[in-house]
Length: 265
Length: 85
Length: 77
View 1 (tube, rainbow over the protein chains, first blue to last red):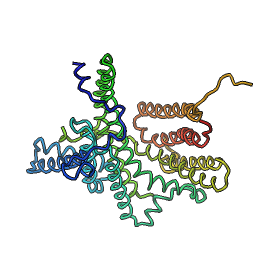
View 2: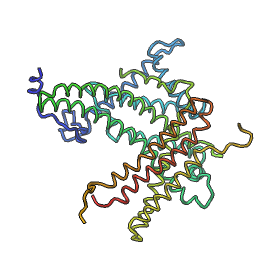
View 3: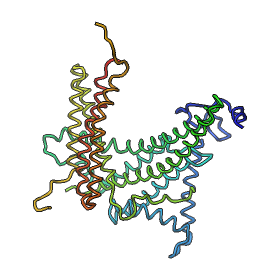
View 4: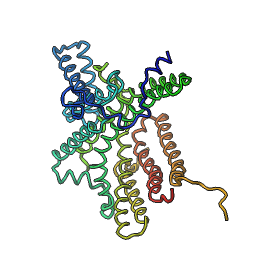
């Protein structure tokens, strides 16, 4: 059986590289060099469709005593609304921002989940474009919330001028600007991207490493099995990281909104 | 499986205290941001004055001090008033 | 005079490794004390949390110095 496995392998692409994240186009038309529709695009479409269909079906005939689907939908939305929205933003504003936060959390979870689902096994969030755009939307949102509440000049004064004596302000204002308006969106995007990228890379290393060891020398089979067991453990870790990163992204967005609309003095 | 809602994290049951993790990220971003901004300004001045790295280092230290000051002012607690146990 | 033993490779990396020992222990001490104090008296956790971040910032500053000066002072290979 091991000999069969070795004979069936063409050259195992080990070690995995960044180029492995660029997937080929999967449309039959347009040739293989037009890359607008790859597996990544298909996965994003499927996640969006799943979220839409699930919530629409769950709320078809809402009852006072919910059935299973309605209970799941209400739990998901209620978790975001109570534990993230209302807790960080207060009762009225929390409920107002809850739809965006819930959509953000579920979209990130569903997209991240593809990294451990068989056949798909790559998360669209491991391409920087998706986390970058989500971070951009959150960035525009918290700035817009602050500007709408305070007006542009007062919002800038609140966020850029810390409570400090006037002679140290020139040192502090560039730091505040950098930290609030440059680091925040960048770190939101890169945190999600790096976690998904690294998770996928780890799974690739241990899976392909098992095959590469097997191909190089069939006597290394026990180590290949160890490598594959490590893959299973890492898949469970990836499951934790999926939920945690989605949660952190949403909580940080809510925290930034709260910081933008907070009454300073 | 793809249709499951995310389960409640064990630390986010309704009576959990907030972890303050967002404060931690803010503190780190003030520190690193301060060092990056003033290190960059120091590096620009350095290239202008050709002093070979000293002013960059001074910029980094000023930025770090500014970052720590910001952390204390923004995230630090006001000193407890008289009469508190 | 011949040098009997020397270090080749990146001295900046070795320097950063040594510089990171102290802040690593420091941050561990800060959070250990916060966890212990919260375990002894949970109501104090909200009050002591700001001091955690002040302490973290001051301790981590030195670790970040290590990274920054590792680049600024990097000479040789």
